[in-house]
Length: 271
Image 1 (cartoon, rainbow, N blue to C red):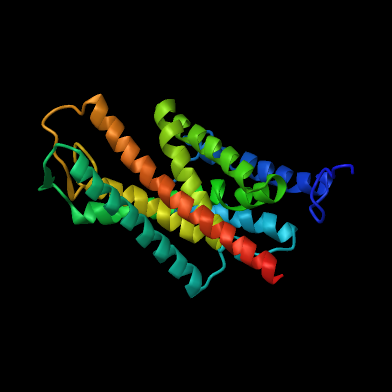
Image 2: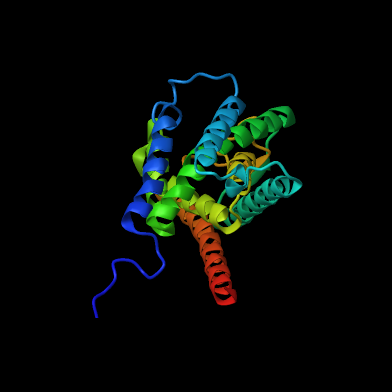
């Protein structure tokens, strides 16, 4: 028997290429945001949130679809997904902080310079800034790449592009490759599980904000409680921290991947 190039019922190659072309076009139009971040100067990232949503709407409208495909329709449900994602991200970092407290030999101390106002402003900034990143990397383009390439191929491509974005913003490539790819995998899985950019943005913002709140050493005015090291961290301590954080992220990713697989199997059996 001759093997079929695609499983029965799957789209033909030409049908698969159209979503990929549109995803790449979307990313190309968004290039001033992620490839040349200093090109567009705005007072607050909320301006870019509006622009990214408008661009997503134009692409979806051309295809005869709505923003609901990305979880961007105005509803209490979407607001709830944003809140649930944020709560999940906070819980993840709190668990990581507890484990790090057990692993690291440093005392933890309250930061007398902590400013609640600055922490609140940081939260608002991160909610908008990370929403822009989710709209660009794990919104319309990600959904179309999944349609054209499949889930895991889309995850890999998006994670690498996300790492490039951080390198362009000044991160060392080793840190960007090891640190952001795991985060990209997590945020992508959240989107796939709930088909919701707000859910992914909530997790993303919560992870960054709670990390600043609990794990910064040396602390900033946005840090409430953190490890207090009287010296530079050793290579072993840095490695332990990275393993704890990446390990926790990967465990959540595995749980989400299993949940997604079970839902797909259940849907196929009921169909």
